Amino acid sequence: MKTIYFLLIIAISGCIRAQQKITDVDLEQFIGKKVEYCDKVYGTYVSSGNNKVALLNLGADYPDNLLTVAIFESNWKKFDYRPEEFLLEKIICVSGKLILYKGKPEIIVSKPEQIKLK
Image (cartoon, rainbow, N blue to C red; front, side):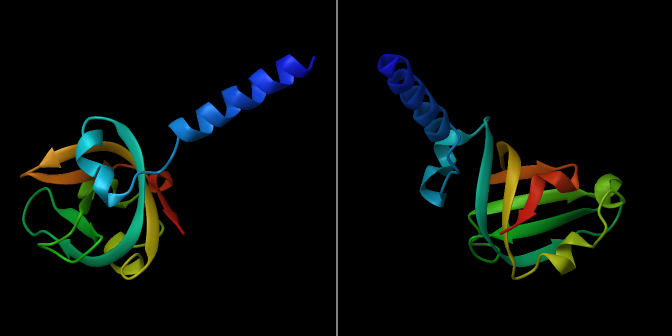
């Protein structure tokens, strides 16, 4: 019985380790994977023209940001707030697939559940 509990504890600790949040030094090695990243929103920007996008700059303001969070206009109606205004200067955790866009790590957010206030 003790052996079963011991193996269960090892299995649980392995699962917890596999679900760790990544840090800025880890970003490049997680491209193409689903991740959760937490940091402060230092700056925001909303593009103009067709297919607008709200951009949140995490880790530092543009162009030194470590990660960009992109929210396309087609998804804005899903939010009870304007992400570019409400999240500015707040610490958030964002989850989603980490991609490279113009050489910078980015997560595209399509629903509010992907962003949590910390």
